[in-house]
Amino acid sequence: MPARAAPLTPWTRGGLGLLCALVVASLVVRVEVSRRQPPPGHRDGREASDGPVDLGMGGLWPRAAAGPLTMRVAECAAPIAVDFVQASPYQPDPSLVGRPGPTDRVAYVYRGRLLDSRFITIRLNAIYLARLASARLTGERMPAIDELAVKVIVPAGCPVSPETVMAVLRTSAPPGALMP
Amino acid sequence: MSAAARLGAAGSALLVFACGTVLSAVAQRHLLETAQTAQHLVEFNIGEAFGLAACVSLVLSGPRAVLGRTDLVVLSVSALAWFVPEHHGVYLATTLAGMWFLLARRSDRLLRDLSHMWLALSVYELWGKLLFKLAYQLIEVFEVAVIHRFGRLLFDGIAVDGARISVRGDWSVVLLEGCSSFHNLSLTVLIWLSILKIARHPADAAAIRALGVSACLVVAVNVTRILAMLPSREAYLFWHDGAGATVVALGSVAAAIVPILLRVERGPCRLAPHH
Image 1 (cartoon, rainbow over the protein chains, first blue to last red):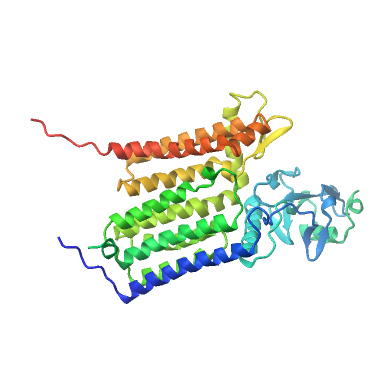
Image 2: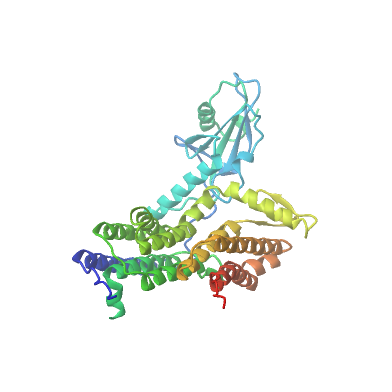
């Protein structure tokens, strides 16, 4: 049976031409960018950070003081626990940090964003990866590999909200002022 | 009839799309990204090579391609992902085009087969890695538990802490993406599918059994490699960055290829007429 003639419509030829042009452009752009940058291995921006922890709303906490804390408030019999957990992939599971009771309220604050404890590892990883993707697309500085989030454990029966805890934390001098 | 005339503009467009995606990812990786290991064989992306070979084979030896206007618009829009400045992200192109051909052109055998390859490449290069990073703490706890179970047969003092494994107090190994069986299993599926498409072999029960054998072998090779890294820093360097890494890479690829290759070579049994 004779072969059917190839449908060489202007659209098909135009599409083929456009794809060829895009291949060439993709390669040329990368070669040009690589010529203007230092060689690979010297520009990986994802490095450990010694910068402060972002508490949100302009609040910062010195990294050197980022250890477990307890906070006593008049409304609660038991102290509120505050900890700093690593918030990027390849780090230990933050849900295993601290020892909340089954009825305690647990919340996380990562770069000012308040998160409850459901699927917390996946959500922290997702925020980190979104920031990484954004930094790649915009050419901004990569997020550090050891970024910290704040974990707040409010004991059962304590009427204080995690937002209130964070407000206190933002206005406190670390770390002794919070220690009972 | 010349090869170009037989291929047609539509077939050429499909070839350019497949090659352009891989070329963009390779250029991004080698020109603008940091190498993961010093071993060239480990850095060579065998999955990408198999996926591209299958796409080229499908277009060159399959039925003549016919593309409509919408198909060409989808291919061209998808190709804009070649400019994503991250080598995994480049495979957003094959995700978009693969989804389109799978959903809109499933009656065309060539386009359906190509969509399978493009989606498998996308899962291996982009979505699988993203899922791994998102659910790292969940996946690795399971994988480390498996390694711990086998490791107890070899080491008395093996201990685990999250994704960290150790057999002595002053040395431990953390499982990341490249060392995870999760990553090797997605490579195994891609190689398996590529060989099936190149051989025009259906994914029947025997082929799926071959995939199961490959998966078990690949996990066994990987678990053995991780356990071999545990005794000392020297052992880690040998199996992670040295000649051991090359041996493991070859072993894993052989484990992925040989079972399905044997199945495809053996072919379907044919009944011979009795005289």
